[in-house]
Amino acid sequence: MRRSGSFARQVLLVRVGRRRPEPGAGSTVVAPAPYEPVTDSSLVPVSPAPAGAAVSDGPIPLLPGEHTPARRAKFVIVNACTLSSLTLGLLAIFLAMQGDVRMAAICLIACVTFDGLDGALARRFRVVSPFGAQMDSLADMCSFGLAAPVVVYASLSGTVPAAAAAAGCTLVAGCAAIRLARFNVSPKDGRFFCGVPTTMVAAVLAVGVLIELPMSGAAQLAGVTLLAFAMVSSFPYAKLARLVKLPPWLWLLPIVGALVDPRLTFAVVVAGYLASGPLLWLRHRHT
Image (tube, rainbow, N blue to C red; front, side):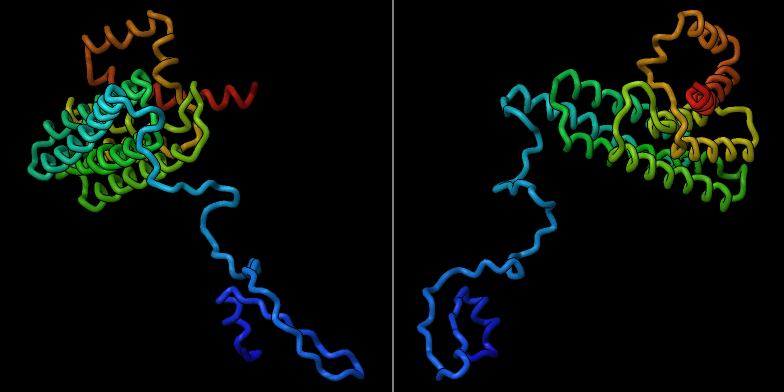
């Protein structure tokens, strides 16, 4: 083979030996070396996988661990709850487009219920999996990142300019996407959320639409904007497991207030929870 075919020889995994003639000596033809595979690293295919990563011979199982019929059934039940939340989110969008805002808000509250149920069942049944976590995140984006802003937009129709309502609801969707993506890649804290969860924001928006808060359209839009920024904030917000450990008399106050004036009580509770994040942040900073 000619010198111009050196690359072709490498591709064909053929190594040809050739010795230069010594000074003062005639040219000597050396027999080619035995065929050996080329080990040049430049010919090794480049893989996007990280170095040292194990290569799987088949598809990654959706459910880690043993695949008994009982575990499969539990896995299906958990993911059925996630798909129910996704379906109810779509139904909320359809109802809001038809003008039935109150029923759309009820669907959002049902989404919140199923979203909490699938996580609780997954932990109880011990079928927690990366697939389930990704499914839950995608369903949350549909139900709380898209359906909730659509319902709020429909409820604000006629009270504020359409462009202002669209800007505020788009902000909610964008902040929800950022919040969910950040949650997926951040280390988990068993005590506090980093920012207000999308589930809680959707629940607040849905209940606010359902009880028809006596606020002007501009005030409601300002509240929507505040909730959007609270999702992507870095303030620590207590999880439900910590809230239930509060003294019982603190729980009696909102219960009694709900019997007297549920709208005012709801607004005070939401404002107090939003204010708790900056207060906890200041406390931890000083200590």
